[in-house]
Image (cartoon, rainbow, N blue to C red; front, side, top):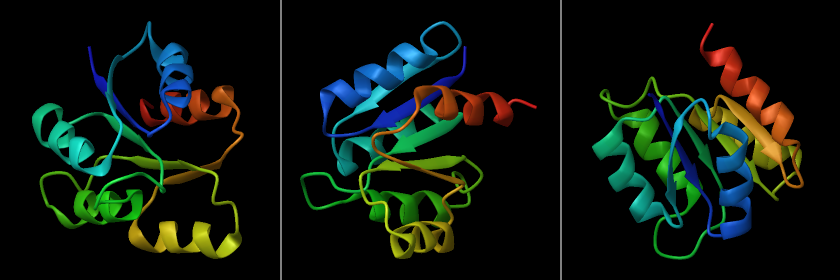
Length: 120
């Protein structure tokens, strides 16, 4: 089974996203940027669902930069799932290599459709 990494400091968001994919993917959760980078190296997930604002020294944009700048991980699709909904934030994420951008409150079905679209 393929892995999806869900990165968010809010356990309710991680649970909601995990339930959305539970029967199709193995879900890995991380609650901060440092844990996310560890999980990416260990599991090489099929996709990453990534919050922007998280505690600790590494935020979601820095995780995105690390994923997209590493030849071993740059092809992993990354969707930002964040409350930062301004166009400037979305443009910044796209410029950094984000493959999708979902603003909280988001539709789990839309995120699920994006994940399903990756398989085709």
